[in-house]
Length: 339
Image (cartoon, rainbow, N blue to C red):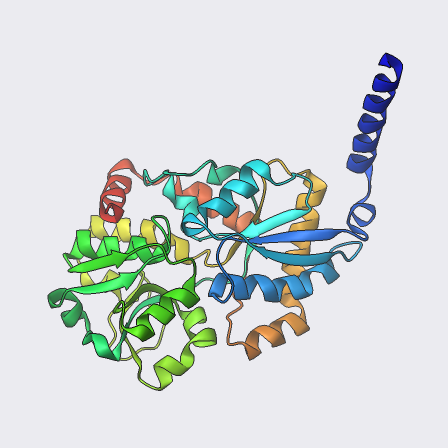
């Protein structure tokens, strides 16, 4: 009995050693790579992930199938926790979650989180991402002046999601009378609620998501864009102000830059921490190659999705830089996003 047990243990050890020693092509050939999506189907994150999945496997040695799996919950914290603590650290699983999550621990918002953003294996970001505040025609909110003077409700996916953080900034820093209705599992459900008149709009509406999924609402004037979020003008929207231009206070501008740094890594893909160096290189190289793949670019263009990629190394550097901000700026930013 004891001898057979020892033999079994040795066999497992040998198998594990062989897996670690396998070339990338040997490891990935015939394998399914799981792509975790931290939101429900139908939203911008889901769409970016599914297009990436259709093309990235061709650039991984062994050409594995890359299969998306939706794992919504707590504004994608559930997916981030899974990637950090549960998913195998062998390069067979990576995923996408809310772009704001890497900054949350810095800002003192850690509820439900079981990860350190600086330790994820960052694969890359497909694009940067302008975001806006959009409102239904029924709401009566058509301008920044309306936002400052008329109470309104917006939808949110969870405490760490953009669409809850940005309204908090508007309320705390600019005294906007906004109320967040929380708990929407994804963008599609939020938009449906806007159309039904249950909420007035959305602050943190990704421009690429709006253009690819809900452009007809804008074209038919069912929604109005009242504010561009961020500190650098990225959209050509005449008459629509940029939030960063609405204050002359230097510290506020710095805090806003920290808060909106998440827009620079708008669609971030990450793998668990501690990936072997060769698997990290394989996934990063495959991601970078996909960003230049004519078929991928053509499909993204057809869906009106932007491709302005950042490498995994650059995303990793940005996360580390953000964690080095001065304490007074960090405190103001943290106070501004607090509900």
